[in-house]
Length: 392
Image 1 (spheres, rainbow, N blue to C red):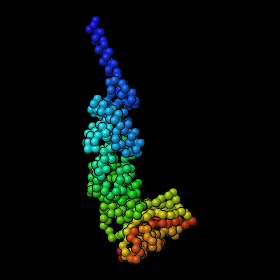
Image 2: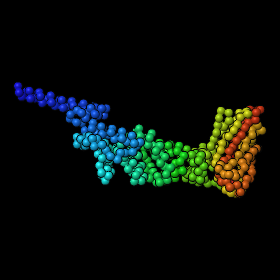
Image 3: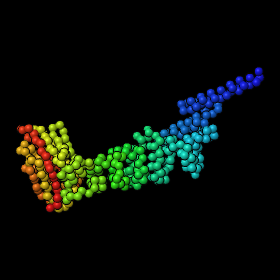
Image 4: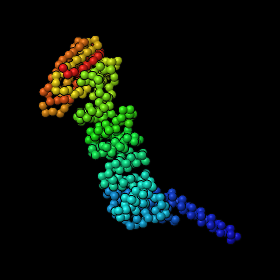
């Protein structure tokens, strides 16, 4: 009878103990104070309590980690660690409460236990920033992005903004050569960050390989962004790297309309509406407009030397009477004394004209194809076979 009673009491004690442990495990994240008050103490609950205190302190100081830790919280963190040695955030609290020489070593131990704790990764990033260790900063951002799907919305824009500093270009290149899973989203953010676009072009050049897969990049938007902020030389250099040097004496790219444009506006930028538009098809630039409609059909940014240039245009079957089609050539640079726009009317099956760029002071020009169908008539459908700009 006594034996059975002892067994029953022992079983009841084990059940009670197990129940308390289970209750603590359930409560540890939602109500850590309750979990800590239950015996035996749940180490993870103590960690949560200490971690919440630290997060609140960081939030209150607008992202700055505290210089000192409340002794009571240090005790909670110590109890968490003694109860459950694999409590990385408890170790982080202990690290911040330690002497300066020990902080980094303890934080590295906490980081080694779990790479998913943003509190710890955040401190490692802040510490790397204080030491100006850019590769380390980017390495911790990479860890954060790989371990948390929700981190990208905050981290990726910060990384794109960091590229505005030229010191980040080579460290980014080293990291991106590993083809991280967030690369595509990063490039999407970079092309929308004007202050980073110039360095992004340098970065793209460092990453270029002859047989690369281009899916992760945003080359066309990057070139467009460079042109938009008037970094024309950088845009041309990147374009030539990606497209290769065209074996022609024409200063215009794809003047024979043999291929669909990939990198406008250094290749043809095509415009189209419901009333008028352009398309490259079957080796021709097709221009179409209904009656009394028209505007900008196509354009390309071209670099002209300080010399006399000959412009030649050939059409498939001539320009009909009801079509008013022109080439406009205007300086794309922001110059105080920009040269006057040149306007050339296309007529017949071919148009040839010489222009001088010898004294203009401008190198980059917009070559625009504009047109309008007459008010009377049925509109037009014109096919241009070639367009070239050559040094005379």
